[in-house]
Amino acid sequence: FTGGTATGRNIMKNAGLKKYSMELGGKSPVLIFEDADIERALDAALFTIFSINGERCTAGSRIFIQQSIYPEFVKRFAERANRLRVGDPTDPNTQVGALISQQHWEKVSGYIRLGIEEGATLLAGGAEKPTDLPAHLKGGNFLRPTVLADVDNRMRVAQEEIFGPVACLLPFKDEAEGLRLANDVEYGLASYIWTQDVSKVLRLARGIEAGMVFVNTQNVRDLRQPFGGVKASGTGREGGEYSFEVFAEMKNVCISMGDHPIPKWGV
Image: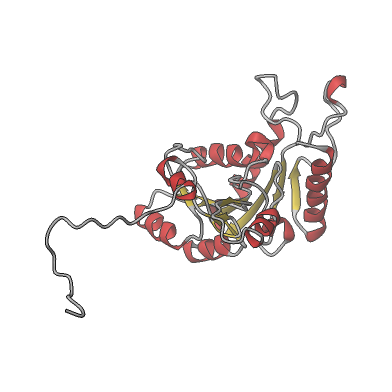
């Protein structure tokens, strides 16, 4: 099953003894350290949250930026988010299309308003439909890519899956705090690490609570790789030979190839 965590929990509860694989929700962290390739990190952070309208389980929706580079990174991130092209998804120049339904639009819009109420700073986008779209698109479920800065990890917008084009930007002090904040959420699907320090990468990859770790890249996937999460993001893995574990049962077949000893009871 691929879908929301609440639905997945209900399926698991009623599955009886049936096998299942659950690919559920996510609130994936992006950790950007001061020694990262900032240009590439900026490109990837924008793509990872705003591509597919943010309606992807692996979206890097919590972007943690080390304090020393936080002001400049946030400024540039918001500037570029404001320039993203919103419109008809069949137009090859469009970068962000409409959300899946009016109901979902209302949910995502509500989270944007909630984030502002919680104290986040709105730097791009907003909770209203764009007014500058062509006439034939004005009834669509469009939202501009939204940037909420100065987010506290305890806010609901930082803890709950929004599943839309909403980026939460948060500062962190050092590696230990970055790891603690990244793990301080119920989900554990994907994670993204940006640093040139290989030792740091290995420490974080071991410590981060996620089924997938992407280092110095956006969410690029080889379909043979195991895809799945931990915690409230699900159980089991999809992809290549890993998918067989869900659809097949292991069987032990024991064949004697010689005259091995057999106890002679009752002789």
